[in-house]
Image (cartoon, rainbow, N blue to C red):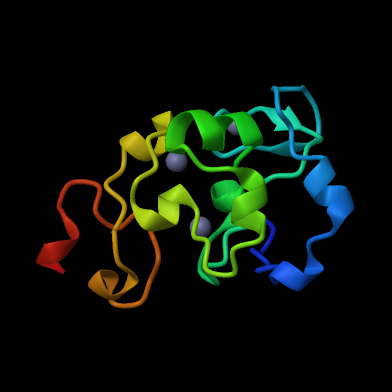
Length: 122
Ligand SMILES: [Zn+2]
Ligand SMILES: [Zn+2]
Ligand SMILES: [Zn+2]
């Protein structure tokens, strides 16, 4: 969560990285937001400039099993926002927070601002 989030344009995604999208769960490398497993495979890159830390990193199996999406498609989609940024993340961490669905609802700060109350009250 400490390192700043970097939005990577589609042009920067290499064939090599696409080849390393995991089809099954391995056990070291970067951390997947959903399963919190560290794996060496290529993960998603959220294009929301306000995304933070590992929030936008999903491994292949999680993205496919939980959201019916492919990491390859996400990496090549310049508009791809991670499930937490879309307010649809169902991981154990996010389920405890009610994340704001739209940035504008939160006055511009993209935080888990609504632990008890929905965004509309802001
Ligand atoms: Zn995962
Ligand atoms: Zn995101
Ligand atoms: Zn989540």
